[in-house]
Length: 577
Ligand code: DGT
Ligand code: CA
Ligand code: CA
Ligand code: ZN
Image (cartoon, rainbow, N blue to C red; front, side):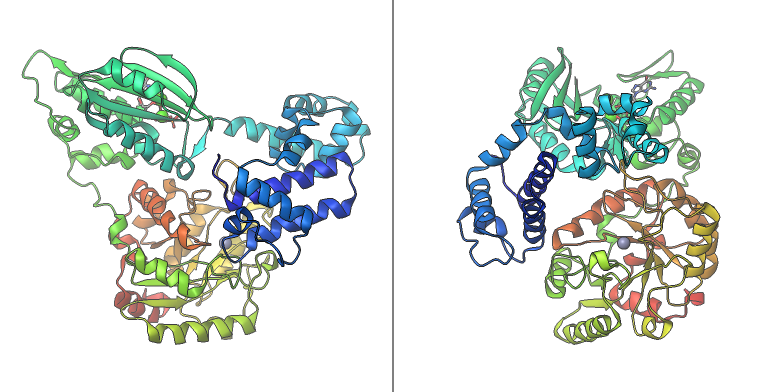
């Protein structure tokens, strides 16, 4: 039986609602499913267990029909009603739901009036004349749909780091545990901690390569074997992710690891350095006329070329080679350096856990403090707090803090930056907080200079400690909004505003490519999980990987300070930070 989670229940109910809508069923019925999905999503308690046990009586908004369906789904892993409903439509129809900006109403019109049931058909019809006769499909809409399709194609077969990491580590462990494997690694963009990846590059050192490639192609997650050779295999997993395996001898392993870690640009530089020393470097060996350096591990290769070992995150040919030759690589921040974190949500706005639960989880992560930053009132879709609720939350936090030993919650807010750059709360209220994260949550489509001015105005406020998710991007889904990042960095340096590194794997915002420049201007960051549940404190690991990729050191990351240190820092006027 497939694992049923809260997400399974929610997405099944939502899909049923869509399908009923497509069938033209009575709106009350569709609404009941949508509402049910919402209730399940926000239910405070183990809804999956209760559904499995058939114990859903008395939950407001979930009637008998829904109760039965949730019970069937949670206890058996499938739902016959949903299967039958789905079978009434062509399977490619479901692709349409993935096109941004295409809601159920439009999908229904396309399906009913033009018989469109796949993205390919949609693209074709959008490029023709016929569609302009359809109500609701003006030139602008059609243009947007085409752009969304293009986006979808552009992002096809790329995956977010956070989306593949748990699976990647599971598969690596399986290879590592194989009795014939002496060394193993995931190389490629994964090892370099790119925010999105095309495929995973596994590497093992073994005396039995053929046995290992066979083992690999027989993983239960395999959907398709693309290549199966003696020393090399490629598989596609059920989720569409391609994984390559190369099986090499123990002697070749350091060379293969170095080569397949990339980046290509970094390797090109390295090979030309080798040539200057009369050495030829490839994925197996050094070769050449004179003395051949002895290599047991990757660092020996770098040493032989007269440079320090380069952390994989930095291998993008963005200055790391020169720094390594001069012994000037940065000492990069590590997860264990983080002593606390800011920007976390609770049930007061759109989080799933209470203040106490979030504090407990932060302690479990070894943190000394946790900044709470629930949404502000303009983010009504996220149940943002108004002035009274925020004042009450501050008092609750102060009270709770009396019960903690060597741990503290820090009272903040994620304050909306309004369209004109003013903030959702007045300075009087902001001054009662320990800190504040300021973020944009609406009106994304301003021209670049207006958006930049909007953010700058917010940063100029004495009470704005840090800027949240700078560009609003959602990786592989929503492009960043137009903003002049160079100007934002300059303003952050001048106003002593921290720019957060939002660790949510969908965001990883500000982008890693900007951090080196920011840090050289003295801008500080805070590695923030934007946690909406206790589980999401795990995101700190992704944020740390991306901070390293951005050349950041412990001293550049404000939440590496101890509780005492951060209190002192927060007490300073902004200009002194
Ligand atoms: P991606 O697209 O996210 O999979 O990125 P990578 O960097 O993992 O790229 P991939 O999987 O094609 O190759 C892994 C590494 O192998 C790459 O970073 C450098 C090395 N490599 C692959 N093909 C070539 C090549 O044609 N020339 C050189 N110099 N290196 C290569
Ligand atoms: Ca790769
Ligand atoms: Ca590859
Ligand atoms: Zn936010």
